[in-house]
Length: 221
Image (cartoon, rainbow, N blue to C red):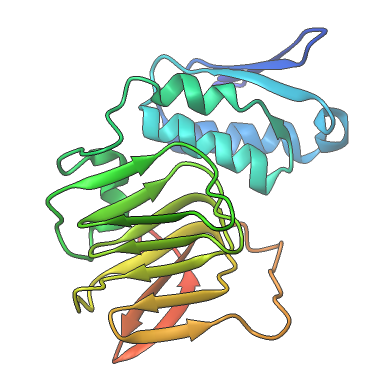
């Protein structure tokens, strides 16, 4: 494996990350090797950009959130803005950006993308699936006839499969819902919410054997 497929270039304003490979698994391994022993050096520095011409937008977005949630680095908001500014967020037919999450679930006709943090009191409803590129704060409500995917932390209320579809799911990089519903199954947050920082895996809520469960999302499971 090439030693320098991931390069960190420091500037006065922060750090640029340059990725020369198209092998996503090698990139993640190289990134972990560079950060694991030097995490204190990079914490506090702002990640200004991720330059990866050989990667898909989806993969760059995932790296962005791995840096933010796994390694606790400061990531400039403009990274996601620049990646997604040309996407039509209202309707995207069977968008392959979320295809990995759809493998064991229903096919929806359309998906609504929202590129911002959802604040308390905001309600988003859609006849199809919803993808939030950002966090969802307590007091925010998401309702969808299809799936709900949050590329960030989810702390609000989610209602997926509201037309009675038990194959719908809710997935997030971090699931800390105040209430979560799929079809007619409801789960509420425990009295004391505890998140295991050592897991570092996205989580998915789905109905299995007529029960709503939340578990780590394992693509090869």
